[in-house]
Image (tube, rainbow, N blue to C red):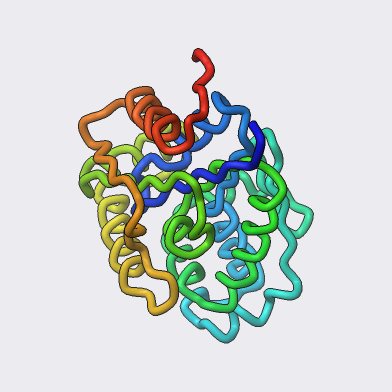
Length: 227
């Protein structure tokens, strides 16, 4: 491979982006960057300070004090603490869209994300990767799925992780996040003009992965390893 390739996978909450992105990155031997985990980690930091995530000024005030690391094994550290499990808890899930809507926080994290993509081939998933973070990405995917399908996926994930929640609460959380993500003033959730829309409701994870790998080959000519 003569040059680095960036693959941007966008879509609404619980569209299966992270699961698919991890698999695609592993098959291609690219680096996976979980931008959602970064916003969740910042949300965790705000809550740990006892601040109101809906208070933009207070939340942004701690930007200089927040450090984070995404490890290759999937663990997430914030301010030196392993928060991999904590950032998936309901109190973080219910507030992360507020944090992700604040321009100063997005700018700080986007700088980190762009620096990561400049040095290596990456698969990056989020809400505005193709439209804002990596507008020149060689491959842009926009995953879509019904609210019910996405809520079921997130509910099942929570059950497996032992995170107490109800399906009804997850449905409401997904709807709330959809509204906040698509109505925020700065870099809202929307497909890039040159993205490929991929409906995932009727597909299994491996089918989505294969569909994305086919798009990668068509867009870049990259030979896909057997998997």
